[in-house]
Length: 110
Length: 112
Image (tube, rainbow over all chains, first blue to last red; front, top):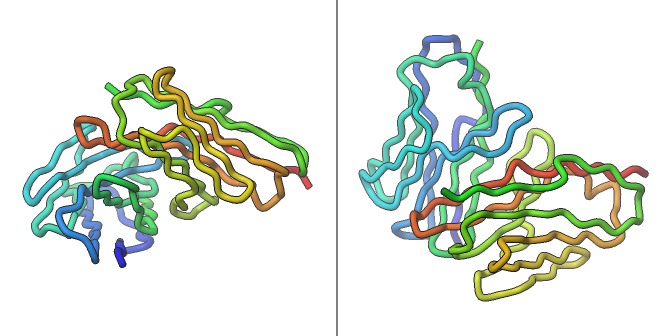
């Protein structure tokens, strides 16, 4: 069966520090992969999506970046975090049909 | 550009009532529409998926309908219970550009 793993689950980072959130999918091949962010009191905002290895589409200009080094691995990064980067980050995958989500990562930038 | 709107933003109803949550989208060229539930501080739980060729799906006390031509979906919750309290999100897509776009959600509070 297909599963999705996302880590870390929570982290507290100082302003200006780097960030790396990782997501891996098991049990499927060539999925579409997504990173969403949910800021306090706001909806889910699509940050990046990928339809294949090395193919990244960015939805919102910001200090975040994404990479897909392997078919089932999706990484969200930042070189220098801002306070406004705080929020709940969700990785997701889909293959033509339903979209499945990871458990999410709570990021607090202090 | 696909835009997804959910109305109302928040809703409080007494236990036992039937209720309807609304979702509208601007681009009807969608592959499917999905309703999710999110409890505070938690991830998303899929409730119902409606393929673009379908008009409705049912699961227990939940019924979701889809009208692609008018760009609307509704989530009907029958005999509401306090445990139904959560934020309900609709997601549309993937569209031709492979994106899946969410509405901002409806915060539902069922009063005991």
